[in-house]
Amino acid sequence: MAADWLIVLDGVAATPGQANGCIHGVRWFVGRLGARLATTLATGTDESLKDVLANAITETMSDHGPQCDLSKPLTPAATVAIVRQAAEQIDWLALGDVTVAWQLSDGTTDSFTDNRLDLLPNAPIIVADVRRYDPEYVITVRNTPGGFWVAAADPAAAYEAITGSVALDQAQTLAVFTDGLARLAERYGHQWRDVFELAHVKGMRALVDQLRQDEIADPDPTRWRGKLHDDATGILWRRVGKPSKPPS
View 1 (cartoon, rainbow, N blue to C red):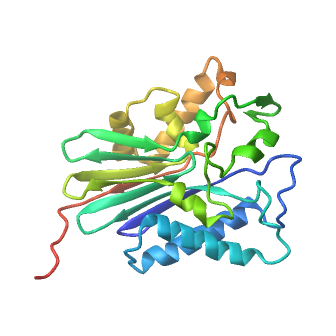
View 2 (tube, helix red, strand yellow):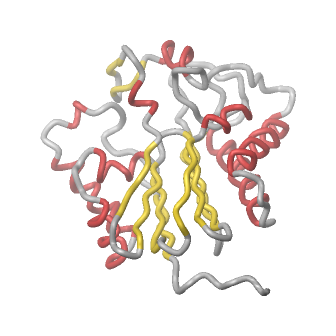
């Protein structure tokens, strides 16, 4: 995170019993990809966010080395959210099941979630330690048309990301959430206005605390796909004052 950009990455957990062809773990991949993204964004580049992400994926691929078979469908991966302030708007990108939310100066809120992972047709679910998709099925739909997309070992996936923008003179607060924290709104019915208010007053930690309370109190947690308690990460980016005008 910097004064004019932020990124959130959420590693895609390795599938038990499935070889991914790589000697590196998800944490290694997230660290490398995040560092590549941060280095580029710190230069103030005006490349599109899709180009920034595609280049970072390409560069991270070169870090793997010949001992890694990046053709494997389950190679280490991550979901990605990027927010960047431009001259007249704040641009955002979402790839994978991340959420970007914003609050405008008039108090209204809106959000976008890349929910393609939850819209897979006829997706078989297995029940083991957690409810999840059958890994054999995931192999056929990850980073494929009609399936879902994450940052892994194909820079073309970056161009399947969803992007948008918010007018700079209207934006008050931007936030990005991993799917684990976005459950506040998506599973437990909290309105985004209330989510922003709680974060403003008590900080982001209060959102995690509220989420854990909701998860523990859930009368039927097995109705949801995924872990009972997933990684819950978010960044709240509050704009202060009016944007400065460039010199004439």
